[in-house]
Length: 197
Length: 197
DNA sequence: GTCTATAGGGAGATAGAC
DNA sequence: GTCTATCTCCCTATAGAC
Image 1 (tube, chains in turn orange, red, blue, brown):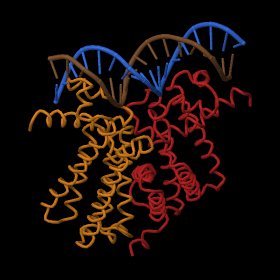
Image 2 (tube, chains in turn green, cyan, yellow, orange; image 1 turned 90 degrees about the horizontal axis):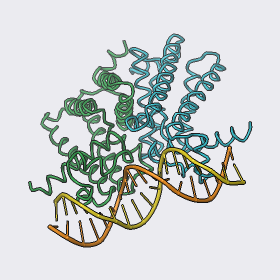
Image 3 (cartoon, chains in turn purple, yellow, green, blue; image 1 turned 120 degrees about the vertical axis):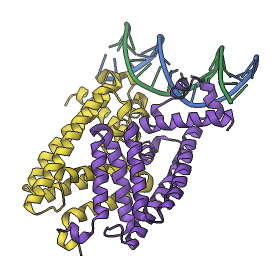
Image 4 (cartoon, each protein chain N blue to C red; image 1 turned 90 degrees about the vertical axis):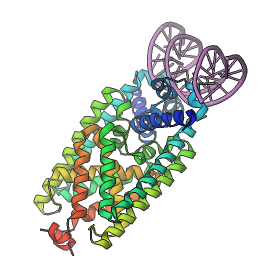
């Protein structure tokens, strides 16, 4: 890994954190360069415009998620373990630095970010959504997950809860997100006949 | 209603819309003044700083919600009708202009807005939350609403879903929010014994 | 690749005339 | 109350030396 890649990745790390904490309009090139001990122009060398930087952050996140998703396959195809890994990852990421869900950032700033970033965001959304639906379908077939109605509907509810609770947790405290995730688990893991007691 | 009140309200209307569409850092005094045919300085006369403006928006929203909540009492104390009115209001507001939920705005920008605005946001959060819990408690007693576990937990889930789905709908289309609200209704209105079929 | 220097613009905000 | 004029600051972005 040469210097170029190194600095570039450091910039992306920092910018990703800033974006997830303060939103697209809430951070500047200075916020990135100063802590890294470099100059504004150096950031512009790697990412000519802020739009380029924003797109790169989302793209890298997509790649990471794709790799992680492949990694989940080590759970022998168990939908429940796959889901557990995702929920753990999501909860850990949220609690460590009180960041928003990436989809939360993109949808909150949706009408004020560059078109190129919106497009990248749509791709991320479709991938996360597809992954969730697939886990729900497989999980139901396996008898590991329980829910009524369409997998698509359940996926919408889960995405909404996760993104919404993670955002609310920034104001109300992390208990809110913990409660929401716990409740999601209960709904999915407990069989209806027992639940209806 | 004199001119002062009139202009002040017009500014608040415009700023509220802008805030809910683009977030706190996504709009400027110019964005407010130009469409209203006034000058930047006129806005500063009514709201010296942007923090003042932000606080005023949230405070007015709190007042509106309080008044609306009192209005809901006309439903003869029925928790279900009260909830229906709120969901209709929420859905209508979201679809008309693809705005975020007010709590969505405040939590997304939480770490980059003035402290005074955060405080006002916390008050709004507590009021919405308290209202939801109360409706759930009363509704369960009345036998109109059905859910397992603590009212507090269900309230967390509902707030998260509503805020999250409304934000996702900006990217994915309003169907997502419609689906989420429909599912919320189904969960609350259908009795468990039937649901577990 | 990273620097210094700087352009060019828009932001929030204030002073003082009307 | 609203205006014109202006201030100061910070933003994104670029040019050119090293």
